[in-house]
Image (tube, rainbow, N blue to C red; front, top):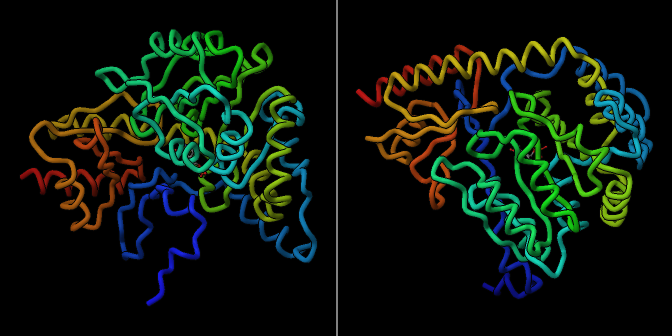
Length: 359
Ligand SMILES: *Cc1c(COP(=O)(O)O)cnc(C)c1O
């Protein structure tokens, strides 16, 4: 057999790609491993997508996605020049890493956070300096601010953080923005709609702030792939330059139509996100009764550990009972499980399975 690797460009061999949670085809699976929203998108989303599908698929979509950017801007009280959209917020993040963090100084990221950040940094050759989280796995803002004030290539945090679910108040974000005025501070708000505090109101006053959100979680559209970033126009222009050097049409006609319909339905949005938060609080109490320790969550998942049971063993015992949760075999968090909030019924099945396993 020939050596396949001889076809690869040298940098491909050293990449350590992100590994997403599995999407297996098992019947009757209780799938609580990838933070999907169990309630589905707003009712009019499907109609909007079908209408878009029956009209104009032979033509390219608008390369600037103006209709969608205007819908996002209107929803959040911004101008469309302050909004960038991409094929999922993962793509938005990738473009932001390329646009803002290829600097002489290292990028600061927490040592426990969304593991894709390190993957993008590696892809684009960006040096990262990991900032230790505290004993409660919270981002240590005072230490990070001191470090950022000397020199740094920028800051990336998730707020609420992943995979821990804990959130920072706005004054902490402000503190980081003021410590790192020469570089961009990226705040990934994938979970903010489940009880976090959004930094969007700070955009007006901070030319270095980039806020990234997604329709995958709180709008239940993970399958449509729509994410966005909000910032002052000079940062949005940089993202447009990168995007237009990569893919003119990241948002297809169906995604645009579905996303606009989702943003228009405030009632569904409010109902489903409150339902997720309510189920989360109930599940936390039940897991505590089973002896789990639970980090305070402002997201659509719980990050939990059991003092007497190995996390990886629990995850595989759950899997054997057709319940999927996420385990990260990484330093500091290897004894934790991340459990996405499902329907009441799914969470009930999880608790039954755990009661059975814990005996
Ligand atoms: C889910 C998630 C994303 C990616 O969302 P997509 O828009 O589906 O690409 C980004 N950041 C964090 C922290 C996430 O958990």
